[in-house]
Amino acid sequence: MNCKNQECLDKALPLPPPLPSHKRGLLTSGLKRRDNCFCAHNAVNTSLDRLFDEAYRADISILTEDGGVIYAHASILGMASPVFKAMLTKLKGRSQRKLRSILIPGVPSEAVRVFIRFLYSSCYEEEKMREFALPLLVLSHAYAVGQLKCLCECWLETKLMNTENVVDIFQLALLCDAPRLSIMCHRFIVSNIKAVIATDGWHDMKMSHPILERELIESLGDEDAIRKDRKRKQQERKIYMQLYEAMEALVHICRDGCRTIGPRDKVPRDDQGPCEFPACKGLEALVRHFAGCKMRGPGGCIHCKRMWQILELHSRLCPNSDDCKVPLCRNFRQRRRKQNKKEDVRWRILVKKIVRSKSITGAPFFSLDST
Image 1 (cartoon, rainbow, N blue to C red):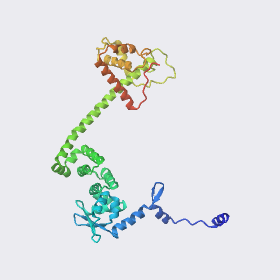
Image 2: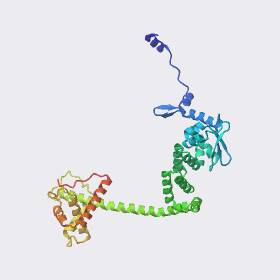
Image 3: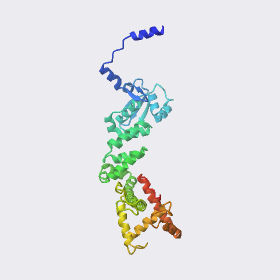
Image 4: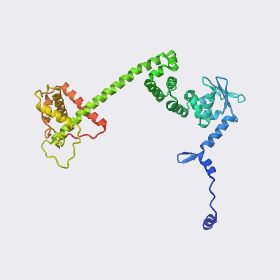
């Protein structure tokens, strides 16, 4: 057909009418977007659920400890779980006339049914997950179904964990190699230790696993020591920040002059705003005390010792002591040559901690040069 005739024919054909609103909802509600395409997620799962419920041409039976029987398809189980695949490979040599069977002991038959249904359609009901999350975690770990295991861990961590079941969840997390879940359980137990100790789960653990109970009790002391060490480090960092801010203010006063406490050798401009260094006021009082103290030598009072320390620290951070306007900067640099090695190492460690504390805060590093 001629292209022009085809174009005329296309223009002549009317556009199809739009779908009814309820039909459009049915078409889009069951679709799931994935990698720029749509998959008929609900439709496929419905077919797989029917295949499981009707057991059409099922070739294997799952036996439970309480006498339940669940019929399934070996090909689907083998594709969903490598453990099932290995078990079915061993059963392959048996006669095809006799239905092959696999026993799953230790869990309720309804939990096994929910587990097998998930292998078919990757779907679950919230009510069933709330009821059987613990046995499903065990089954998903035993049969290497990673997707279901992640779901169980998420549900137990965010929705189902409480003081009554946290001990049971913690023990299963250790047995099922779920490190994140075990850590979250441990944190929950430590935070609610008095309520958890009073539960039946703790009593049962104490009787069946006394070593685990003792380790949990010992971890309380470790957590307390960690909190104390964290608090001590925060206090140290606060002191280091105060020392650094004092050195910033010292350079600011001696180099630029401060409008708050008065410039060193400059007349402040009328448009000059207030001082941005919060340590200026405190440093002013320290400088005035240092200037008038009769014991201002290195072995003087505690305030003079702090001033000597600030001057010493500045000299160790100053990149150009020859032109620096901070008093005694050059003298302290020359004095370091006479210090013993032990004292010099102590000062170096202190300077390193101060600089590291400043960098941890994320604040801009103040230049201590004299330019």
